[in-house]
Length: 200
Image (cartoon, rainbow, N blue to C red):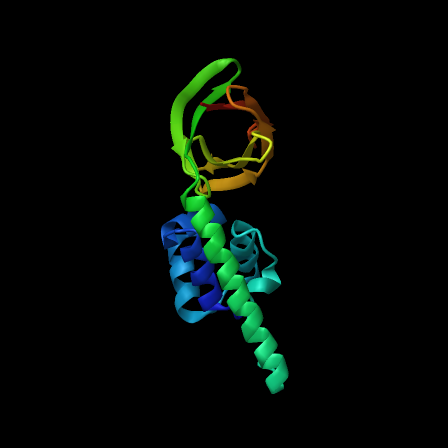
């Protein structure tokens, strides 16, 4: 399949991700990302994985056949692109001035604590916690106008033959100094619990 390499690179750089980070989030190899960004050729599975990492539809990164546009349609297209970039600039400016949020993250299994860490999370960015070669948790915190904390999380399970594999993306809503919990069982049946507390 042919993908729009410029769009993939743009989406990646907008998130300040390296090729390695995109590879980890999409659960593909670094060489796959390098090859796709260079050649524009990708398997259907890779397209699905990359579009999922960016939370968009696979069609959004596929190349479309060039169409002939009238002058009026071209003008409308360019104006909408300019407005979109203007909106992104405003969004970036608002995110860059937001206050960071301290998160206390605990991971446990069968009531036994595996790890406990504090992450200083900048709004609009993901913070990461790894539990040996078992789990990887990515979390992005955002304060809502109602002073609640929205936690966008990604949970990865480590598999010997594949590395970290994305298993869940729960979105949690909590408040400062109140815990939000994620419970799940790994593919081998081992139960895990992740507790996230935003601190102020």
